[in-house]
Structures are given as C-alpha cells and as structure tokens.
Image 1 (cartoon, rainbow, N blue to C red):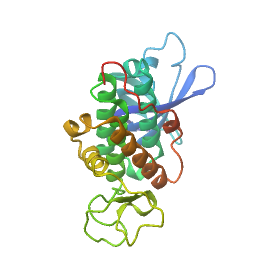
Image 2 (cartoon, rainbow, N blue to C red):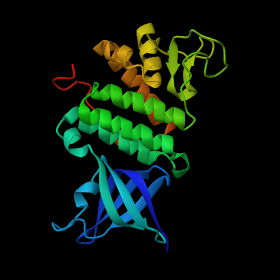
Image 3 (cartoon, rainbow, N blue to C red):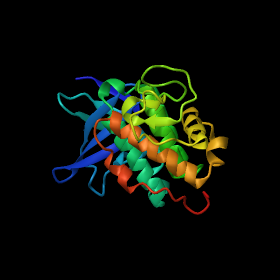
Image 4 (cartoon, rainbow, N blue to C red):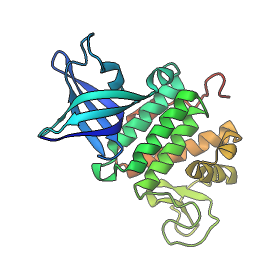
Length: 247
C-alpha cells in the first residue's frame, strides 16, 4: 500500500496496547488523519515527543485499511512546552484542537490547518491574550466552515443594520422584529470587538476592555457550541484572565 507525506497538527492521542499510540492529526493536504504510532511510548522512541498535542510535524505515513501507520516524524513547530507552561494558553489550545477535531472531515481544508497552526503559534509566543486568540480562531474557523455569524444585517430576514441583538440560534445579529422576546442588547463596543476578532484586527482587540472582551467571549462561545451541535468541553476550563506579561 502507498505511503504519503504531509504536514500535520497533533490534535489528540490515545494509548494503544503497551507501547503504541493512536494519533489524531489535522493535516495540510489530507484533512483529518487517524494513525498508529508504533512504539512511541517506549523511552527509546525516536519521535514520540514529536507526536504530542499542539505539536506540528512533517510526517510520513503508510496507508492502512482503517488506521494509517506513522513511519517518520520531523518537528516543524514545538509549541506544546510553551503552551503547557501557562494555564490560560493551555486551556485555550485545548478548546482550539477540540473544535478542529469536531469539524467534519469534509471541512478539514488547508485553510483550516493554517488557521490552527497560526493560533497555536500565537499562543505559544504569548502574542495576545489567550482568550482573544481562541475567540478569533473560533469565529474564523466557523466562517471557513460556512457558518459565519451575521454581524451587519439581520441573520433571519436580511434587513440591513445596525442591529443590537445577537441570537446564536438564529445566526448572529437580528433586527428588532425578528429578535425573540427577552433577547438582550449587545453594546456597540462589543459588536465592534466581534468584527475585529473575525477580521484579525489585533490593534482593536488588544485595546478592548476586559468587560468587552468577556462579553464578546460569551457570545462567541454560545455561537460556536450551538452550530457544532454539542458542547466544546474544554471551554468550561478556559481562563479569561491573562498571564503576567500579557496584560
């Protein structure tokens, strides 16, 4: 059977037998890949550390019937250590890889891969507040999957904005006529932040207040979990308090 080579982000792993491990990866050209890494749990393994969550590797795989087999792995991005050293980065990274894993195989595109790699790199370097990196990733990955929230016109009837009510179940901002009874209003600064998160405007994001960031995070979390049809368990542990040096 053929072998192939690709770049991949390690999403999660499972123990298999006494020395092997099942590795779930998001690759650049082959989408999500499920493979067996034989012997990687032995201390003598040459590439076990390269196949841990949050790592980016150049992998060579042997195509199997149900699971592929990892033959080689060369490190391209060692982000795991720096991410794991900070609780806020670690929990945000877990939510990101869990989201990537939840998306169907048909939605695993090269853009999805590059977006995840960029997010993990930014987390490892502490370039921005971890929660903001996660929120931006969630909005952008949902957009790439065809679920971009409506932030300018009513998500239900298409009436041009501005609108001030955000309803995750309806797809974003809705007009007063379409908003369910009791729908809370969203502050203008929060809406501006949502637009900045989806566009990657980090000067606006970094200058936002903690209150606006927390409000936007709540909307992003509700929107992502609704459209993925089941909760992202890691979000329950995500910290919205920045680490020292990221404030």
